[in-house]
Length: 218
Image (tube, rainbow, N blue to C red):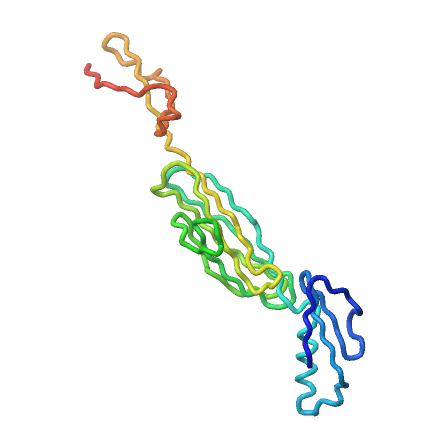
């Protein structure tokens, strides 16, 4: 049996089966099979196996189809905090989806590397047709300076139409906020009960006033 794989410029000459031939559209191209002799010419011992291979190879819907949601993750965390988010991997095809997830601190899926502020619940799995799996994505800001941190989660699978699905991840870490009481003095009496509270951030660029203090003895 000769196997032909036309490129995306090919046109469909027939659909389904036509005698001993079949066509299946796969992505932007087509898979075509054609047998130049009748099935009866194949010896009985190998006829069923040959027919099965013929049909399965060109069968419509005999491939997995991956769905990843969301395709980007953006989260804001305060200092020394963590949050668990969910990434869902589904299979809308008609065969098992085998997938893996790798981290990339640079954002490039061809250069996998650990993202120190991110943890995954699993590195991969198998999802049956019509089902989905939830992947826990934990973001951690412990010990991180204020700012934006980026990376990618790279979901690879046996879906030939989408073998790699990148998921962009952005985590913003906000500065500490410290509240300092201002004590108003009248003579030697501290009016602490009426002291206003003014927020003070650890980022000098965001301070609205210079910080100074002195020890008060009464």
